[in-house]
Image 1 (cartoon, rainbow, N blue to C red):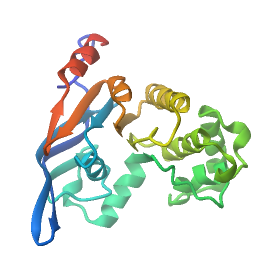
Image 2 (cartoon, one colour):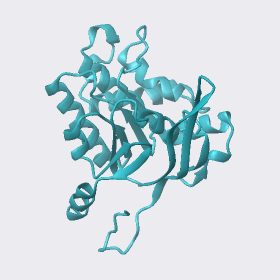
Image 3 (cartoon, rainbow, N blue to C red):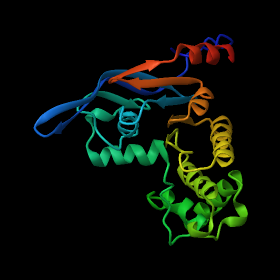
Length: 248
């Protein structure tokens, strides 16, 4: 359901559109269908949760939406570009231009400082400039509350601090979409809540679209929309639709 702004009569922009997505794999000469004919539209600037039991395929779906993997069949558009028609090199360009990632396991390079880890996406840009990238990375570290830890390596940072570095890194290329796969799964309760609030506050401040996979029903309930992947089908929780509309 689109979120309609009645004050301006402008429908929000669809930034991710998935149509008839099906993912199947071969297991011992048999075809296992993980999900089939999924349809999903996600709108610019909103935050969306995808939940489901372990093994339901939610991380697989996230990987396809993030262009890390390809569906067996179906169509996917990211910011108006037909990803299903692109090769791997072209999909990588889409990721570099439009997408940031936050993972459960942080995936920081242990030999690099927090600052150097945050700067990594900028190094992939054709117009990379060290000084401007450094300034931008320091600003992002300040936004996530780690300006004093910029020269520390991951091994001396707490789990919550490492995830903050990962969030700053995800924002380095100014992506339109942040995909987060169990972003609080490796954190204790209090730290998890801090990371959740940080993700939502940055979503509001920077206008990025946030799509997250989580086992945590409380985290999912904070999102504007909540989808559950169950028995190979995607169901939107009506309660979240009503609550999201009530906030407009």
